[in-house]
Image (cartoon, rainbow, N blue to C red; front, side, top):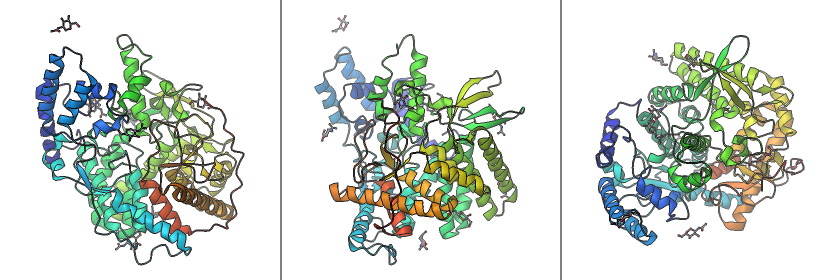
Length: 587
Ligand SMILES: *[C@@H]1O[C@H](CO)[C@@H](O)[C@H](O)[C@H]1NC(C)=O
Ligand SMILES: *[C@@H]1O[C@H](CO)[C@@H](O)[C@H](O)[C@H]1NC(C)=O
Ligand SMILES: *[C@@H]1O[C@H](CO)[C@@H](O)[C@H](O)[C@H]1NC(C)=O
Ligand SMILES: *[C@@H]1O[C@H](CO)[C@@H](O)[C@H](O)[C@H]1NC(C)=O
Ligand SMILES: *[C@@H]1O[C@H](CO)[C@@H](O)[C@H](O)[C@H]1NC(C)=O
Ligand SMILES: *[C@@H]1O[C@H](CO)[C@@H](O)[C@H](O)[C@H]1NC(C)=O
Ligand SMILES: *[C@@H]1O[C@H](CO)[C@@H](O)[C@H](O)[C@H]1NC(C)=O
Ligand SMILES: *[C@@H]1O[C@H](CO)[C@@H](O)[C@H](O)[C@H]1NC(C)=O
Ligand SMILES: *[C@@H]1O[C@H](CO)[C@@H](O)[C@H](O)[C@H]1NC(C)=O
């Protein structure tokens, strides 16, 4: 709310007032609500009343949060600090509705069960067309409109008020997410649902106006962190389709505020890049020092080795790191852990990530392009310079010429002025090491780009059924053997753009391997899922904090986009897979 100062911000502040007055700690807890912190949250989550920590925080209040607070205080006072689980459950049943009951499924006006007139011209196989139509039919299944109560009584909901309906990710991910939306709108455009795509971007722009950045997702408990910053990429995608400069008039100031959020402290860190120069690289850094409300029990347990009285600062920093891992989109991955360690050693805030800085390079390039389109040449050249400076710094500091890829950097120390000295975080390959190629860092250097493509071929990340996230079988979901739709999408585009004829051949094989994987999974369980196994086609992914989720927004988006651009080619030569051997196992 810091950067908004708008009417909406005032309305939102009012919504918090009852909570403040009850808690009597207005100056400290102005932004807290009953789903975000407080004794009720802690009691419900540690009981635990639900087998998924996300259930309770998604339950709308049936009465005012202030009266819930008061009733709960009275209840616990009566029981002198001990409360039977049955009584707690009864209390929750009386005061809260079913998780997700504050929005309803809805059929977008631009949805057609037959798809648009020119649906998937390259797909002739009738079974695959049928599959694509059934996935198209998932859009209304995943579309949500908020009940009027969300706007009328925002404090009764953890759901954030949105101006437009939108497509959610699926299952426990009951709301709109930030980076998921980029791939969801690609799928919507394939299905002729341009208005729905536009509506979703309107929602994200609205959230960025409200909070100064786009929150991780549309919930109060997600406000203090974001997700990989792809909003400018979404705006470019829509703008390139419509050439509507009115969109840019609205979007540019918002994008600029979001840019500032990502490029100032604490997210930006000045780094000594040699020859007396510094450059401000960015990191994921959540403004959050408690267990994530939606993973409260998990984070509480992860920190249980720390003593609450003597190691409170360490606990808070661990919780900040877990929330920052969620902000990275890669929650969780061995990428973020100290060598040999597990999630208790998570050190996201000490890492300057190659993918995040690549997304910011892309944001700078996009802001240069969009400002040029509205005739703002001074802003355009300012962002162009920023992009060039970041590219040069990334290539100087993060690029490893021997490996042919960019690495995450680890902050070793910071001097009195806050300038950091950095070292390589890990030599191991992650798909994130190649994201700068997709983001355009080597668009002007075709030979160097080819070297990166070649490095990718030899990285071991290319497997029979897709691109695997890493080679470490850590049990985390952003690691071996899992494969994620957005990573397939970005790498296929990078190979097409930079790999020449061979790159195109590999890209087409990867597309078919991925589609084959999705289709085999569909035939087996009749569902699209959040992540797949990169080794065995048709097998869903595993690991992590929660069971595999179906739906699934970005998977559907990438699948439809691939089918539109490449068709279905089961006879294409497969990509020769590197032996699917994990580097190490933590289990
Ligand atoms: C969680 O609980 C719900 C019902 O409360 C049940 O359907 C589901 O199977 C449970 N999930 C797990 C992973 O235990
Ligand atoms: C409440 O608990 C405390 C300590 O656990 C005990 O000393 C006290 O007598 C209890 N009060 C009542 C009213 O039960
Ligand atoms: C948008 O259009 C510009 C100008 O034609 C082009 O350079 C850019 O690659 C396009 N971006 C996307 C995401 O379509
Ligand atoms: C919707 O988007 C698609 C793909 O980006 C584009 O080809 C089409 O012209 C758009 N349709 C309308 C009505 O704007
Ligand atoms: C880099 O960050 C420092 C403070 O952390 C700030 O003073 C400086 O202006 C920043 N430089 C640029 C180019 O943004
Ligand atoms: C983070 O939260 C603190 C209070 O805990 C607040 O003072 C500060 O402005 C916030 N910082 C950012 C960057 O949002
Ligand atoms: C969330 O950020 C706000 C400021 O934007 C801050 O006041 C609050 O303390 C932060 N919450 C946590 C739990 O750190
Ligand atoms: C794989 O990840 C685990 C943590 O989950 C870590 O202990 C181990 O060192 C990692 N192995 C390699 C080779 O990076
Ligand atoms: C160009 O953009 C900057 C923000 O980057 C803004 O302050 C300025 O007013 C714009 N200039 C024009 C002519 O629109």
